[in-house]
Image (cartoon, rainbow, N blue to C red):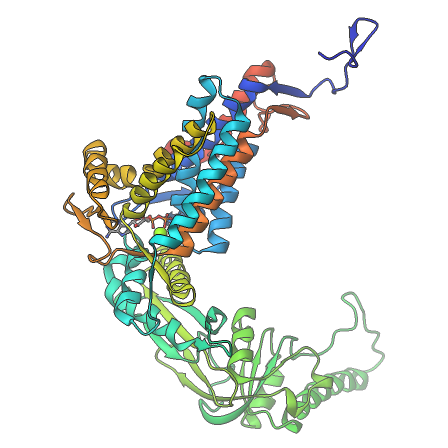
Length: 559
Ligand code: ADP
Ligand code: MG
């Protein structure tokens, strides 16, 4: 208690009665424990032999996944420190699209090793500084170790896609799916004016359909929209058609929800009906007047309007997903109209449209000279299968896009981590003071990746690490673990290839998150730290532990 905080010998109380406080080592230990618990929850999913998790929400919805960020988002975590680690996964997902389990696991391991250093009375600021130095150094080394990718080298790029899919739902059909992913990315890759390669994933749309096997997934030029025409009599094959995209309903404009209508005679009722009909006729007239052949509407279309549209030979589709409408806009060069009164021929896009009655799908190709797009139609037997497939393919698209645009890749299977650990250890010699110990701890933490890859494959993690270190000491920079045989192999040649960007990002977010947690030496909580409030009698210490217990919520027992 400092001098200023005392008044007349009495400690001055500034915190509310219900608030709780935890300081120094207690606070650090508490935070580290919470963060590590999160990291441990996802570790068993790492790598091709990682297992999946089944997450059951409080509503009873089931998600079966291997994807780090999905697991953490679906878990009912209510501990503030644990949430900071979840943010690592989210940042990694946003920035790189893959590597979320790696980032979170490394963050957890950094904190575990930091705890040992704290126990040796090393000040947190020295650890933070050491981690920061090591992370900067390691990221520079990644640039040094990474190899160039020729954007035309389809075979190598396909391997990047396959590596990202292994261990995921997509794995069983990874040859086909990797090919589709690579073709999709190449279809939207352009050479910018400054000679840079730009991949615009906005032009890759993912559509899913259940009922058939994942091996029947396909890539289409243009959009695939799982909808029906609103009336059977509408045309279903249109080439060079003018397409209207509209996000307001095509129906009678309702005055107010509660308007009541006072009718004095049957004539008035007829008049009223006539006027409604006229409104719909007018709307269809407007569509006809701007020469639209097809209407894709995000909202509903009134039955009578459907009838008029069919009579005019206009194809109409209602309740189109907002994202599909946006994609159609890119594809056809049209605009999304929000008010039919203001629509002009200028707003229309150019498209070839075909409807397949068997599949209940529309195929739309852009017909103008606007940029074109592609659609990956993912199929799977059930919703759960398709959902996990979609997550896996999403990751693969991101990493392939990065490998093509950043043009740098690395050997996976732990090879890069062991090589970085070796270099970081060498670098530690040049760091003075206690920071040196933290730099070494950083190197140890990187080796968590090959250790866990081995562990998840049922191999001896210590033997594996010893072998890998020996190979790297002998100058073999790309020596990694073949999780299927347990051998040390050149993983680059074996086709286990990852984009450098994702790895750089994983190290950055892991070390930043660890440092964020380590910087905290004081936790002041308004109210009980166990946010569930389940342990009213818990007292200060007990309440804190309760906060941890809240993590995982209803599904804690399943992890
Ligand atoms: P993350 O969420 O971090 O991407 P993953 O479960 O996708 O986690 O596992 C990625 C790790 O698995 C990477 O270290 C990658 O090199 C490794 N890996 C992927 N395929 C193989 C393989 N065939 N053999 C060995 N390691 C692999
Ligand atoms: Mg992955």
